[in-house]
Figure: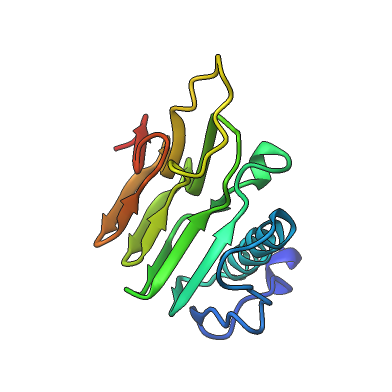
Length: 171
């Protein structure tokens, strides 16, 4: 149809994330800064994926991300189908300390052909604000739900209140 004629597409399917361009603030952060870090990285991922980007490269970056604030479907970094999220050994994505019993940094939900490589994901196990009577066992590095052909390689996940990787209904 005519809609396909006017569909915008990225010029180069290989996208290098520029931390200055996307206003990422490195190091320990206030909740407000961590919310902006998450929102800015999520916006870049959504735009690149939505325009047909295939590889999203993150170089040296050490940021805190608030993955507990806001509507659930916007709290995490969502990876689309047919996508490679490529982090370097100098990439550190950290959870901003929070009191939520559930969170994840990276989420793949009903996707296919997704690859995640390299980098370090850090939870808030030792800085988490535990609330008595709550389980606090679903703080995840990566959450993969109902997805197929997902490859995860050379990623470290440390200090989460739950698992570094949770796979549900996935093949």
